[in-house]
Length: 431
Image 1 (cartoon, rainbow, N blue to C red):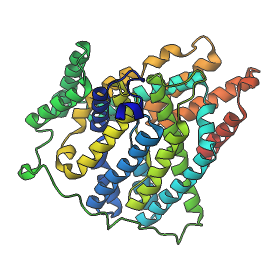
Image 2 (cartoon, rainbow, N blue to C red):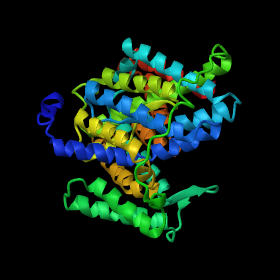
Image 3 (tube, rainbow, N blue to C red):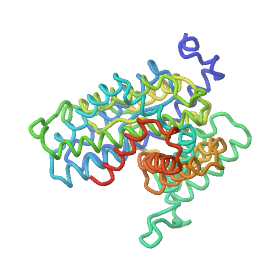
Image 4 (tube, one colour):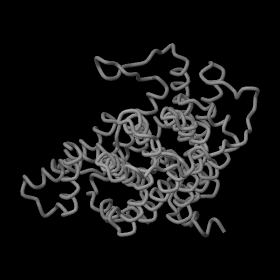
């Protein structure tokens, strides 16, 4: 039944491959269950309640992606967006976390409307094919960089921005050994290499003291209640200028993070059609809109499609069964929170670094001879890791594409919607 519903065999996959891919995706993004509550609790939100809200919003959104869009992508509250929620809106601007949740709730409603009227789909389809391939490569460098940072292999440096971490650091050792183990497994064509690499790295992390087994070896616990953050909205400042600014930022970043992830991972998985369009993209965009809408109700920040979905695709995931498996893992995580929270960033780093390599392959499809295509593609690729933002990479790519095409007299290659998007990017940069 599952095979027929998801067309697993017809997609060139197997049920076992899809399940392993879904688990792998979950393992690479499970950190959000620990990180999101930690970030949002800085605003005064109940940490336990946010943990449950994080898992529930991921389950709802990923289930929709699995059952309706039938694509192998997973969703959860987005990194960066949660930091903006906590440190800019609440701690920086001085608003309550209830105000911030209200902005997220309104964002979800607006996204539902924009998706229903095909506006978001129009934006996805307007991105030139070469830029879509560049987005995949840029995301690859970005997530590899995230992996290296999570393991402490690269660290912040005021003089050079980043530098090499200490090779004596146990977390660094875990990350480097994990990369080697995962690489050997891949070279030997071992199924589930990324997942095995994560598990072996976690065991090593326990041995070296990077992480610890749950206190009292308590591996199962009842999920904390979401009551402290459930449906806690504040509409008293909904018409203020600050709300407009906050809402625009949430909309902008989430819009292009999601678009970039869908396009980039779909490009890597060879899912784009002849015109470079993502299959069932409208349903996929509905998934993050619904996730954001319900996530705000549950009590968490904006939900978005996760770039770590590339890990599952790299394991062979091609259908919604992969996403269904990931959603099931989030449901299990509600009961086994201590287990999943103990997996350190150093243990998932090898998978992210290797997936970064996988994501580079579409670069061969980019026309590097035409500089009006090559320069925007290069800027898209390089700006993602350097700005730690998929959205900013797309912004530089789209802006340079429009400008170069117009200044070289090739304006017929620029769709009107691209000019509108370019103008919006400029407004965002200078507002």
